[in-house]
View (cartoon, rainbow over the protein chains, first blue to last red):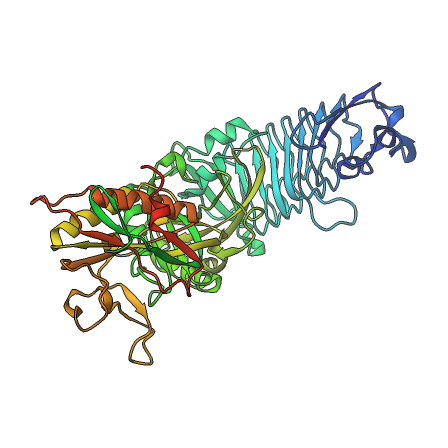
Length: 261
Length: 326
């Protein structure tokens, strides 16, 4: 039976925490006591998460397994690492590498996320490989780095290197983006709400995008970045790159008011 | 006719239509406007009347409203039937490549439903390639996109599409489409004293059946005059004229025509399920029995084609088909 696990932080976390051991797919078959005994690493030392969270469970309360983390997790890194089952909602900020190497399911961060969201992690060569990672706030550098499949949706701004070395997948970003956007991307799609500055040595000149696929993308459902969804019904432009890698990746953005410019 | 029963004064022979197992798929063709869409669909279903020589029986199922299509453009649903999955896998990519890929603005998607929901790979695992084959036309510039859609039941569905650059923008199609077991060869035969009475009854029957979901009548105008029997005096020919229904051969052959019949026309239908064929035959036969020519002439009989029940395992007895009301 599906259940909703609600985990409320008892007190703020000032130390650096590695939460990669918190796995929704394992928790799906574990009792609440077993979940409380899960160990994460606080400043490199193992500690049971039951010391940090108040845990509640609601059986059969939803269509899929859901985990809700409530609190400020900006010092908690690798939340949703290798996530592959159910939906994980973080009612607050998340640290670095949220959703790194995830392969399916959904992760939703209501606040900001740190660096390398949905990216590769440790010795793993590819970033997220499926599923949907939604960050309603801003994200740091190298979001979607080495991403291979799936969708990364950013409601705020993204730092440097968004979609760098991307292999495939889709990234949406409603705010501004930093430098080195899509550098080294081979395939995949980056959808932006504003025209980015891209080096001509790496990306083609903008060309009008005419595809019914816009409408198919616009029919996706939540959690969505509304401004991007509405933009998909408008005229868009497209560039392709990274040409220095013979890449066939693409960046979409709204049509300029003066196309010649 | 012996063993007859009557419907609206028309004798119905107490026999059955013999139908066969087939494999089928539903395709959704869309385009920027209804005319391009119609052009693409008509090309796709061309030369698709009979598996005997066309490889596939394929026809338009119905016109779709924009809200019913994946890309919210005007659309047409097409049903295709073949004797084997392998034949369908050969025919569909070939036709899509030559008829949809080539038509300006046109796109093609899968349209098989399960429990009222557009079904993906998880519910229909047997697949027919579309973009999987056609993508190579993109010469390396094609783009594959897998996106997660939420169906009407709230379940995630990952659908994979291909976007192939073409001269008007992009050709978009689904990676593959599901195929299901289906039934082909449902039929009934209309007898009349003159061509006009049979023509009017035939058109009334096809018009009554065409709005029904899950069936097609693949022959021209939904009907055929060249009903066939299995085999021939010529060893290389495996289907030949159904001489027992040919008016000009009465006396030469063991005719099944009523004494005063001058014309016989057969309506053939394929369907995704036996219930859909049964409903369509019911609607078609009832409409045909009501129809009158301008001179007030009605049909003089209706029967169904079979091979003695030895070839096809689906038997649609006309008495059973008509036992439910309209």
